[in-house]
Image 1 (tube, rainbow, N blue to C red):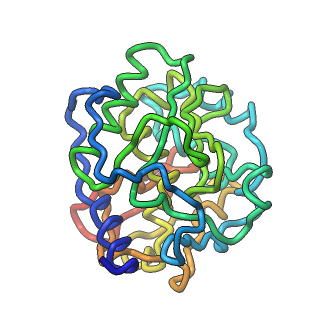
Image 2 (image 1 turned 180 degrees about the vertical axis):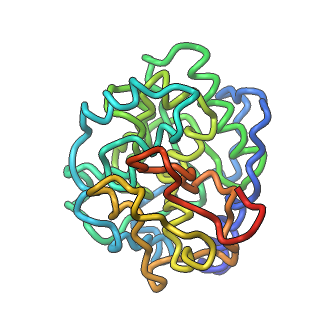
Length: 275
Protein backbone atom coordinates (compact mmCIF):
# COMPACT_ATOMS: atom_id res chain seq x y z
CA UNK A 1 0.00 0.00 0.00
CA UNK A 2 1.51 3.41 -0.90
CA UNK A 3 2.95 5.21 2.14
CA UNK A 4 0.76 8.33 1.94
CA UNK A 5 -2.47 6.37 1.58
CA UNK A 6 -1.42 3.86 4.24
CA UNK A 7 -0.72 6.54 6.84
CA UNK A 8 -3.86 8.52 5.99
CA UNK A 9 -5.99 5.39 6.30
CA UNK A 10 -4.29 4.43 9.54
CA UNK A 11 -4.89 7.76 11.21
CA UNK A 12 -8.37 8.18 9.74
CA UNK A 13 -9.35 5.24 11.95
CA UNK A 14 -8.53 7.09 15.16
CA UNK A 15 -11.27 9.65 14.50
CA UNK A 16 -13.97 7.04 14.98
CA UNK A 17 -16.33 8.05 17.77
CA UNK A 18 -14.98 6.99 21.16
CA UNK A 19 -17.50 5.11 23.30
CA UNK A 20 -17.13 6.04 26.95
CA UNK A 21 -18.95 2.98 28.25
CA UNK A 22 -17.07 0.67 30.61
CA UNK A 23 -15.23 -1.59 28.22
CA UNK A 24 -13.21 -4.37 29.79
CA UNK A 25 -9.57 -3.63 30.68
CA UNK A 26 -7.09 -5.01 28.19
CA UNK A 27 -4.46 -7.38 29.49
CA UNK A 28 -1.04 -7.72 27.90
CA UNK A 29 -1.91 -11.25 26.83
CA UNK A 30 -4.97 -9.98 24.95
CA UNK A 31 -3.01 -7.75 22.58
CA UNK A 32 -3.08 -8.75 18.92
CA UNK A 33 -0.06 -7.88 16.82
CA UNK A 34 -1.06 -6.86 13.31
CA UNK A 35 2.46 -6.95 11.90
CA UNK A 36 5.28 -9.33 12.74
CA UNK A 37 7.87 -6.61 12.38
CA UNK A 38 6.18 -4.12 14.73
CA UNK A 39 9.44 -3.63 16.63
CA UNK A 40 10.99 -1.85 13.64
CA UNK A 41 9.99 1.68 14.55
CA UNK A 42 12.85 3.80 13.25
CA UNK A 43 11.89 7.44 13.78
CA UNK A 44 12.85 8.25 10.18
CA UNK A 45 10.81 5.49 8.49
CA UNK A 46 9.51 7.72 5.70
CA UNK A 47 8.48 11.28 4.96
CA UNK A 48 4.81 10.52 5.64
CA UNK A 49 5.66 10.10 9.32
CA UNK A 50 6.41 13.80 9.78
CA UNK A 51 4.17 15.89 12.06
CA UNK A 52 4.66 19.65 11.77
CA UNK A 53 4.56 21.26 15.22
CA UNK A 54 6.08 24.59 14.21
CA UNK A 55 2.83 26.32 15.25
CA UNK A 56 3.57 25.53 18.89
CA UNK A 57 4.76 28.39 21.06
CA UNK A 58 8.03 28.23 23.01
CA UNK A 59 5.90 27.55 26.11
CA UNK A 60 5.49 23.97 24.81
CA UNK A 61 9.16 23.23 25.52
CA UNK A 62 10.44 22.85 29.04
CA UNK A 63 10.28 20.67 32.11
CA UNK A 64 7.44 19.27 34.25
CA UNK A 65 6.19 21.71 36.89
CA UNK A 66 5.07 21.03 40.44
CA UNK A 67 2.68 24.01 40.25
CA UNK A 68 0.65 22.11 37.66
CA UNK A 69 0.56 19.20 40.08
CA UNK A 70 -0.75 21.49 42.81
CA UNK A 71 -3.60 22.61 40.53
CA UNK A 72 -4.55 19.00 39.71
CA UNK A 73 -4.51 18.15 43.41
CA UNK A 74 -7.42 20.58 43.83
CA UNK A 75 -9.45 19.15 40.95
CA UNK A 76 -12.74 17.40 41.77
CA UNK A 77 -15.58 15.93 39.75
CA UNK A 78 -17.48 19.21 40.28
CA UNK A 79 -14.72 21.39 38.79
CA UNK A 80 -15.78 23.41 35.74
CA UNK A 81 -12.69 22.44 33.73
CA UNK A 82 -11.27 19.07 32.75
CA UNK A 83 -8.04 18.01 34.51
CA UNK A 84 -6.02 18.32 31.31
CA UNK A 85 -6.94 22.02 31.05
CA UNK A 86 -5.54 22.98 34.45
CA UNK A 87 -1.81 22.75 33.88
CA UNK A 88 0.61 25.64 33.36
CA UNK A 89 1.85 24.07 30.12
CA UNK A 90 0.97 25.19 26.60
CA UNK A 91 -2.78 24.67 26.07
CA UNK A 92 -2.82 23.17 29.56
CA UNK A 93 -1.21 19.81 28.82
CA UNK A 94 1.30 19.97 25.95
CA UNK A 95 4.91 19.59 27.08
CA UNK A 96 7.92 18.67 24.97
CA UNK A 97 10.91 18.11 27.28
CA UNK A 98 14.08 20.06 26.53
CA UNK A 99 15.98 16.79 26.36
CA UNK A 100 13.92 15.45 23.43
CA UNK A 101 15.55 14.23 20.23
CA UNK A 102 18.14 16.67 18.89
CA UNK A 103 16.43 19.61 20.59
CA UNK A 104 13.78 19.41 17.88
CA UNK A 105 11.49 22.39 17.57
CA UNK A 106 9.50 22.02 14.37
CA UNK A 107 8.76 18.36 13.71
CA UNK A 108 7.89 15.10 15.46
CA UNK A 109 6.86 11.76 13.98
CA UNK A 110 3.95 9.36 13.84
CA UNK A 111 4.36 5.90 15.29
CA UNK A 112 5.49 3.44 12.66
CA UNK A 113 2.58 1.28 11.47
CA UNK A 114 0.40 2.62 14.30
CA UNK A 115 2.25 0.55 16.90
CA UNK A 116 2.93 2.27 20.25
CA UNK A 117 5.12 0.35 22.73
CA UNK A 118 4.23 1.36 26.29
CA UNK A 119 4.95 0.87 29.99
CA UNK A 120 2.57 1.70 32.86
CA UNK A 121 4.47 2.90 35.94
CA UNK A 122 4.03 0.73 39.03
CA UNK A 123 2.93 3.68 41.19
CA UNK A 124 -0.69 3.50 39.94
CA UNK A 125 -3.11 1.44 42.03
CA UNK A 126 -5.19 -1.32 40.44
CA UNK A 127 -8.26 0.85 39.77
CA UNK A 128 -6.10 3.47 38.09
CA UNK A 129 -4.30 0.88 35.99
CA UNK A 130 -7.69 -0.49 34.94
CA UNK A 131 -8.77 3.00 33.80
CA UNK A 132 -5.64 3.25 31.65
CA UNK A 133 -6.19 -0.23 30.25
CA UNK A 134 -9.83 0.57 29.47
CA UNK A 135 -8.65 3.54 27.41
CA UNK A 136 -6.17 1.30 25.58
CA UNK A 137 -8.95 -1.23 25.02
CA UNK A 138 -11.02 1.49 23.34
CA UNK A 139 -8.18 2.19 20.91
CA UNK A 140 -7.95 -1.50 20.08
CA UNK A 141 -11.71 -1.90 19.76
CA UNK A 142 -12.43 1.22 17.70
CA UNK A 143 -9.25 2.08 15.78
CA UNK A 144 -6.38 0.48 13.89
CA UNK A 145 -3.81 1.72 16.44
CA UNK A 146 -2.18 -0.85 18.71
CA UNK A 147 -0.49 -0.38 22.08
CA UNK A 148 1.99 -3.17 22.81
CA UNK A 149 3.99 -3.90 25.98
CA UNK A 150 7.44 -2.39 25.64
CA UNK A 151 10.21 -4.90 25.05
CA UNK A 152 13.42 -3.67 23.43
CA UNK A 153 12.06 -0.91 21.21
CA UNK A 154 14.14 2.26 21.13
CA UNK A 155 11.05 4.49 21.03
CA UNK A 156 8.25 4.00 23.55
CA UNK A 157 6.01 5.81 26.02
CA UNK A 158 6.01 5.38 29.77
CA UNK A 159 2.82 6.41 31.52
CA UNK A 160 3.98 8.09 34.73
CA UNK A 161 2.30 9.26 37.92
CA UNK A 162 4.27 12.26 39.17
CA UNK A 163 2.87 15.37 40.83
CA UNK A 164 3.22 17.50 37.71
CA UNK A 165 -0.32 17.29 36.29
CA UNK A 166 -1.71 15.83 33.06
CA UNK A 167 0.62 16.29 30.11
CA UNK A 168 2.13 14.74 27.00
CA UNK A 169 4.34 15.56 24.06
CA UNK A 170 2.85 15.58 20.56
CA UNK A 171 3.74 12.58 18.41
CA UNK A 172 6.80 10.38 18.68
CA UNK A 173 9.78 12.43 19.83
CA UNK A 174 12.27 9.55 19.94
CA UNK A 175 13.53 7.37 22.75
CA UNK A 176 11.75 7.09 26.08
CA UNK A 177 8.97 9.66 26.31
CA UNK A 178 6.66 10.31 29.22
CA UNK A 179 2.91 10.75 29.41
CA UNK A 180 2.06 11.97 32.88
CA UNK A 181 -1.28 11.13 34.51
CA UNK A 182 -1.19 12.43 38.05
CA UNK A 183 -3.46 10.43 40.31
CA UNK A 184 -6.20 10.65 41.17
CA UNK A 185 -7.25 13.63 39.00
CA UNK A 186 -5.81 12.60 35.63
CA UNK A 187 -7.06 9.01 35.94
CA UNK A 188 -10.52 9.84 37.31
CA UNK A 189 -11.96 10.00 33.78
CA UNK A 190 -11.15 7.59 30.98
CA UNK A 191 -11.50 10.55 28.62
CA UNK A 192 -8.46 12.25 30.16
CA UNK A 193 -6.36 9.14 29.50
CA UNK A 194 -7.65 8.95 25.91
CA UNK A 195 -6.88 12.65 25.50
CA UNK A 196 -3.27 12.48 26.65
CA UNK A 197 -2.56 9.33 24.65
CA UNK A 198 -3.93 11.05 21.53
CA UNK A 199 -1.38 13.82 22.04
CA UNK A 200 1.36 11.18 22.26
CA UNK A 201 0.00 9.61 19.05
CA UNK A 202 0.29 12.95 17.29
CA UNK A 203 -2.97 14.89 17.58
CA UNK A 204 -3.53 18.48 18.69
CA UNK A 205 -6.61 19.99 20.33
CA UNK A 206 -9.80 20.13 18.27
CA UNK A 207 -10.48 23.82 18.93
CA UNK A 208 -7.05 24.76 17.52
CA UNK A 209 -8.11 23.65 14.02
CA UNK A 210 -7.75 26.33 11.30
CA UNK A 211 -11.54 26.52 10.76
CA UNK A 212 -12.31 26.77 14.48
CA UNK A 213 -13.86 30.25 14.28
CA UNK A 214 -16.52 28.94 11.91
CA UNK A 215 -17.83 26.71 14.69
CA UNK A 216 -17.15 28.38 18.05
CA UNK A 217 -16.68 31.84 19.48
CA UNK A 218 -13.85 32.37 21.95
CA UNK A 219 -14.91 34.80 24.68
CA UNK A 220 -11.51 36.33 25.36
CA UNK A 221 -12.98 38.70 27.93
CA UNK A 222 -13.54 35.63 30.15
CA UNK A 223 -10.07 34.10 29.61
CA UNK A 224 -7.44 34.30 32.35
CA UNK A 225 -4.82 36.97 31.62
CA UNK A 226 -1.85 35.34 29.92
CA UNK A 227 -3.83 32.27 28.84
CA UNK A 228 -4.97 33.74 25.53
CA UNK A 229 -2.19 31.86 23.70
CA UNK A 230 -3.93 28.60 24.57
CA UNK A 231 -6.63 29.48 22.02
CA UNK A 232 -4.21 30.01 19.15
CA UNK A 233 -5.33 28.60 15.78
CA UNK A 234 -3.02 26.29 13.85
CA UNK A 235 -1.79 27.24 10.40
CA UNK A 236 -3.73 25.33 7.77
CA UNK A 237 -0.58 24.33 5.88
CA UNK A 238 0.75 22.58 8.99
CA UNK A 239 -2.33 20.47 9.77
CA UNK A 240 -4.06 17.42 8.35
CA UNK A 241 -7.71 16.74 9.21
CA UNK A 242 -7.74 13.41 7.32
CA UNK A 243 -11.07 14.45 5.80
CA UNK A 244 -12.88 14.65 9.13
CA UNK A 245 -15.02 17.71 9.91
CA UNK A 246 -15.01 19.81 13.07
CA UNK A 247 -16.21 17.67 15.99
CA UNK A 248 -17.78 19.37 19.01
CA UNK A 249 -17.82 16.00 20.79
CA UNK A 250 -14.16 15.19 20.19
CA UNK A 251 -12.27 13.98 23.25
CA UNK A 252 -9.65 16.53 22.15
CA UNK A 253 -12.01 19.52 22.44
CA UNK A 254 -11.71 21.96 25.34
CA UNK A 255 -14.59 22.25 27.75
CA UNK A 256 -16.74 25.40 27.63
CA UNK A 257 -15.06 26.86 30.74
CA UNK A 258 -11.44 26.19 29.76
CA UNK A 259 -9.05 28.79 31.23
CA UNK A 260 -11.93 30.88 32.56
CA UNK A 261 -11.04 33.67 34.99
CA UNK A 262 -14.58 34.24 36.23
CA UNK A 263 -16.49 30.92 35.93
CA UNK A 264 -18.06 32.21 32.71
CA UNK A 265 -17.84 30.39 29.39
CA UNK A 266 -14.75 30.88 27.28
CA UNK A 267 -16.03 28.80 24.36
CA UNK A 268 -19.49 29.09 22.88
CA UNK A 269 -20.73 27.05 19.89
CA UNK A 270 -22.09 28.88 16.86
CA UNK A 271 -24.46 26.02 16.04
CA UNK A 272 -27.73 26.19 17.95
CA UNK A 273 -28.43 23.30 20.30
CA UNK A 274 -24.78 22.21 20.56
CA UNK A 275 -23.16 21.99 23.98
